[in-house]
Amino acid sequence: MPDKILFVINKTSGENNNDWQAGIEAYFKGKDVVLEFYHLPDPVDCNSLDQYIKDAKADKVVAVGGDGTISLVAKSVRGTPMILGVIPAGSANGMAKELMIPTKLEDALQIIDSGRQTYMDTILLNDKHLCLHLSDVGINAQLIKNFEEGDTRGKIGYLKVAWKTIIRRQALEVTIKNDDKSFCRKAIMVVIANAGKYGTGAVINPEGEIDDGLFEIVIVKRLTLWGFLKIMLSLGFDNKNMEIHQTRSVNILAKHRAHFQVDGEYIGKVDKIAAIIQPKNIRIMLPQA
Ligand SMILES: [Mg+2]
Image (cartoon, rainbow, N blue to C red; front, side, top):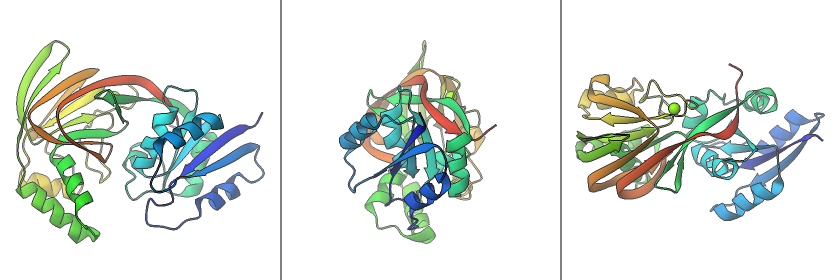
């Protein structure tokens, strides 16, 4: 039987008006595959999507969109034999960049067609949120919230919001418990990292591997003005202000409720985060090594 590939297309993501379905059909023309397309409605109904994916019984399910679309599809395919594919089509393609998936449609399709099939870990947060990439509590989540609330346009608008956020930054007081140890820190943010870098290119977790059965807790203790500029210029974080712990699970308790985000999606304020690794939870198509 030919392979069946289901494409979940988020046409509202990104800025271009590509006809993704036409491009995909053209690429596979004459090949022995069955294609199916699901165009995400706006707003998305997560339950219908999940049911659709389960009923489709596809071999591969491809997210055509940004980080949010990948997260949606990942939630349905995790723990199943279905293989996740990614076509970067969002305004934020942090996860695709991390996975080295090219933005050119034909190149991304080639990976889905004949790339390397492998596995990746996920992190389960507070028993309900699935993290493939990076989650954090503190200033970055605050920044995401401020962007969502504001009417931010363009690079200047982005910088203005970022600047306001950093000027008003407040340190978190956290207790971190993992394995048999427990320690307290003051920090500007604490990252729960499955991967290595943010969509801007700023490396937060140089040792991060998506398939080693471990994740990292990255504590950013201070953020200086120069440190902030370095992040904005995608030069990375000041290592001397960071502390990294590798683990399989962690509990983070914040003295005061603080902003929390998962894979770029603002969740709300929390004072507790329980994180646990789910090793090799997702089958995925990646570029040949
Ligand atoms: Mg890892």
